[in-house]
Image: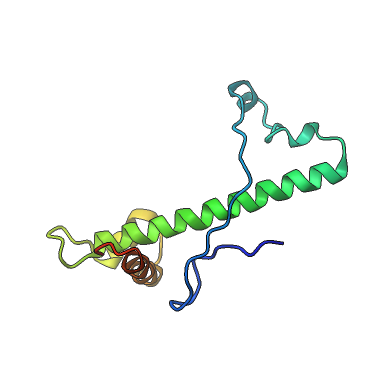
Amino acid sequence: MPERHSAHRSPDEAPRRMRPAPLLFEPEAASADPEHFFDLESIDDPARLLERSTELALAFRAAADRATEFQAMAAAMLADPKRFDRSPPDAIAARVGWSEDYAKKMVEFGSDLLRRQGLPD
């Protein structure tokens, strides 16, 4: 199984990019049917069902990890002491339902990501 890109890697590790499986968007008519999920219910071959559902699971994990990185970078930007409207960690936490400790860790992680990208945090 391919290695996941994780928001919880050590600061020494370089970011890894995983190529997610292509996601096929649900047709609008399918949203009315709660049993419908990316056409998985229509796949009769168990081997193909396992393959496609695994592709989707990996793609969703990769998307969630990438979204977490963007959350962290946004938190770092909001907490930047150079901003006149700087947000403290408790305010950032309240905005998104995090604990204050988690917000502090996300600000730190986001600052690290921004530094690696050469962007000001």
